[in-house]
Amino acid sequence: MYWVIGFNVVLIVLAFVVGRGLFPIKVISGLVEGFHATIGITPPTEKQLRWVVVVWIASVLVIVDMMLILFAYVF
Image (tube, rainbow, N blue to C red; front, side, top):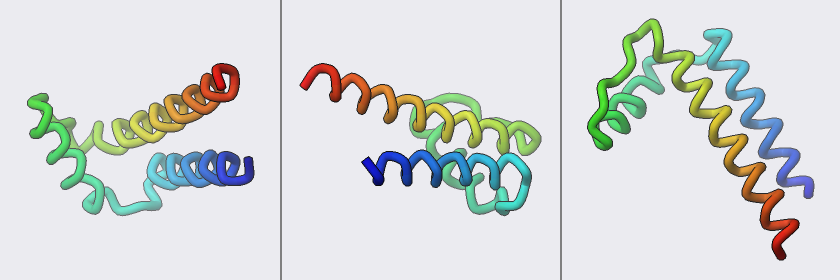
């Protein structure tokens, strides 16, 4: 249970740091552009990039939490 709480805290802090601009966007831009090129969609502009990463982090958080909730009720 502690690892779930720790995972949530880490992702929330990471989203906050990226959203506030405390993390250099150049580190992330290569990953985002590579991912978008792999799936064949247009990469976001520099202005949109920071919020795209925040949305990705939030999506991962919601998906993982929902999977854990479903696993708890199914098994």
